[in-house]
Image (tube, rainbow, N blue to C red):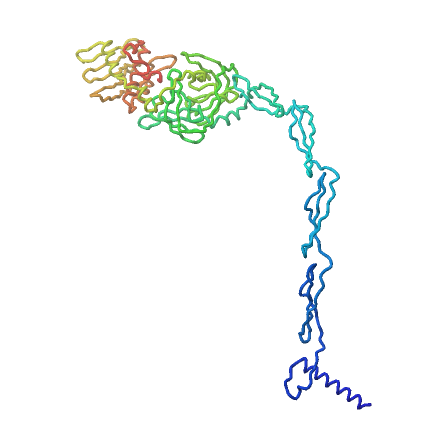
Length: 551
């Protein structure tokens, strides 16, 4: 028994060794060629080609021990893998079609889709209803485009929008037109201009008003005044006397300085001028020509005493005062030197006048030229300020006219070779002394002198103002008086010797010969008015020649 088991075990081990040899390596030894070992394959399988509806597939089996392989067919699929698509939608009067297609082989078949049981309508207003006509709503089936319409009832109310067809002004009411956006029906409504608070008037006006500085021929500052925009493209309105005798000028509006390019229109009698600056888009205040009643609020705007943008409030104290053919609005809003040419504004923010003058030594007797005078301005060829200066200020030989007047009216003294025209006399308080006042012309020196013998009880003095001409060159001077003595009164204004003399001296020191001669002559005219009412116009010397209107 033991031998049998031992033999069996030996046989088993021998077989195992043979198996290993056959599977693990090849033996070419001649001693072993007579024996071989077979591998007990252990196969693993994988599908290397999927079966479809029209082709067989392939499954590959591979031995995991020795790598031996063999192939196996996989039978065709017996069923398709379909996806569906509606290729024709069903409508309210036609069936549709649904197509099924195999994703694998492309095989397909169709299926009918039943008609829709009802229409599916969308609506659109194709004609709006108005206050006079019915509207129409159109319904359209979104599947079959079947349509039908339905009436929309007339609108029971108007839908109005409003526009201002005429602006309100101080002279007439405005018109607001209301129009129905549905039927076009319209009606109009009048409305009045709303009064504005003073703060709004200031804010609305300040960017339209500017300060004017004028310059003489030598470039020195001549005068200061106010102007305001008359049009968006650079027209400026001011007083004529603001620019009179100016050779150039600048105006500052809203912080921007502009050079005055030209004078478009002016009238010395009305005292108005329209200037032009190089500007566009300027804010412009409206102008109101209506005569406002006494008591209405007004506002003055200007550079009072050089204080830019000074704003004052008052009332109209006389609605339409006419003086020397010019119409004025009299008011009590505070104005000062520098306000000339500035606007007088009503309670609606409109300009009703141009401030021009005040009566001195009075209580708020102020005057603005009525804007109704603007229609009297004549526009001619534009002039530069220099051209206007030369046009309005021709050289006037006042010296010669005065000299001739003195020769014609005065007494000739052959010993002194001069002519003397007595103006009057003054006496000492006890009437024991008599002193003469006179204008004289010295032929040899070609000199005109104004001689004032002034007297107090204890002191007499000679005051002399003179001007002479040698070869066309003028010179002038004065001798001061010892006392400031009363000369007299003209139109309520009192003149003393030093007042008159100081005035003459301050003006005669001007570099302009023409100005110097005029001022001397003006002083002489004042004395003539005081003592003998001498009329210099008799020899062709006008107030303009003398500068008397500015005294």
